Amino acid sequence: MAYGKALRAAVAAPGTTPLIGVFDMLSASIAARHYDGLFVSGFGFSASHYGLPDVGFIAWPDVVGFAQRLRLALPRHHLLVDVDDGYTDPEVACQVVRALEQVGASGVVLEDQQRPRRCGHVAGKRVLPLEQYLEKLELVLAARTDLVVVARTDATDEDEVLRRAAAFARTDADVVLVEGMPSVEVVRAVRRVVGGKPLLFNQIAGGRSPRLSLGELAGLGVDAAIYSTPCLFAAHAAIEDAMVRLKEADGVLPDDSIGVADSQELLWRNVSRHHDVPGPRASRPVAAG
Image (spheres, rainbow, N blue to C red):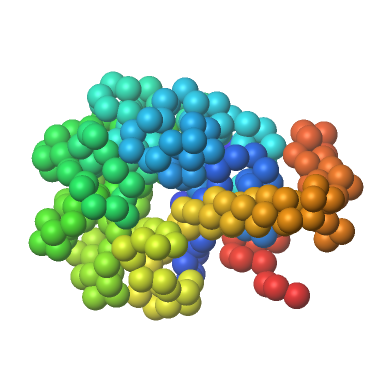
């Protein structure tokens, strides 16, 4: 299946296509019931797989293995994968891209940060010289066959943001992402300089960017939005609450918990011989009620 082609079509569709950040197979299984676009967030993967902050600890074979498990369980979903800076060297970045395409990823996000890297929504980020990043980007673009490539800048100075966004738009990258856009005005300015190139927006709770609805993003000309951490932060809050309640109840399990049958019903959908079970109905969010 041409997963890249399918993701391009979703991004090109009217409105803003949401891609939900997942951090493990359970979070992906739940998110996949409601959305057909998933995002392998570096923030979430670092937290889940290593218990460490998103500052450069991720090893690329671990990400490839996760993407492979996702694709086996979810054969029809869009899978956009954060590959940080391509894990340092251009040669490594190209190897990662080829490996991810082979296991069925739909696309990758390649950033222009220098190491030591930081989460895109915290202070202290440094970016590579533009020409150095563009060289890496061009090699990655040449290495892919169908995979969607998102060119991401972590620049924070507005003039530099616009210079880099315009430069990315002139390449064969499929989509441009400016990480941590601090205002609607900056989103509009980026939209102008990238011209007709699809634009991606990242929303993260407590991050630098404003909270905007999909309708508001569509009005700003944003083609796709990644939601990096709703699953991770919801799990964090729910597990903390469950532990507090269990302790307060002297170890008695609550009556309102998810039970064995609920969990099994979810997980059996991921067994390959059950892939004829209907999945999400559209590339847009499933309406409540």
